[in-house]
Image 1 (cartoon, chains in turn blue, orange, brown):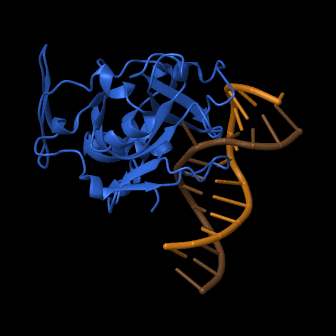
Image 2 (tube, chains in turn orange, yellow, blue):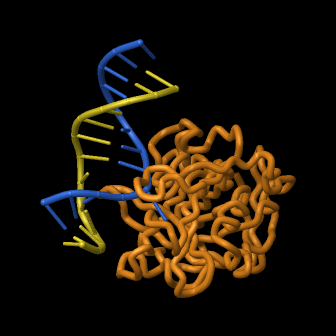
Image 3 (tube, rainbow, N blue to C red):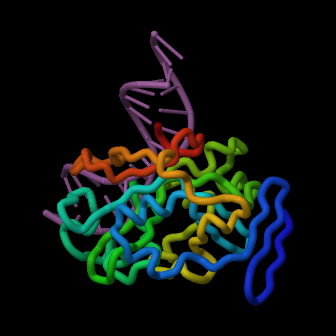
Length: 219
DNA sequence: GACCAGATTGTCT
DNA sequence: GACAATCTGGTCA
């Protein structure tokens, strides 16, 4: 992968993908209904640039967490120190520590003060694959970003990025067109299912993933 | 493939 | 003190 950068945009040339310069997703994207945002995020590209290099993946699995009638949501019992970023402006990162070992990455949605977010559960690796392999300590492509804890490690996302805006900067969300020739999945290829790893409100259909994509965490 | 135990610690009750 | 939006590596089929 070669990587060139100027003031306005970033170009990446890869044997498999041609990445083109477009604008990151705008604020309005995140202000729709949270389940809608979760669905629309499929196909979008999460990018992280660090000193070690650039890593990026196409989103293939998400979950929505709602402020009302959703006891599985961290915001369900109101604002605390931990979930404060969820109540902040939309279009920003909400990163939390889980199971004593891992971090999960979310995108804040709706409006400031509401407390809703979309958990990014799986990515299809697009750029910086050697870097991801190094960070994940495995060469198996399907094991790089197929889970919320895994993709945080693969992209080198750190908890100090909690609350950071995703509209610009090192950690950002790009539209599907960021990868030339690619677009959002066709609606008929989006599967709606129950969320994973929760006990409360486990029956709500708030998980979305791309049908037959091998990078999805669980089928 | 399915199922299960163990790791490990911040957060909230 | 219980629990958690997880992952890994083991067993068994």
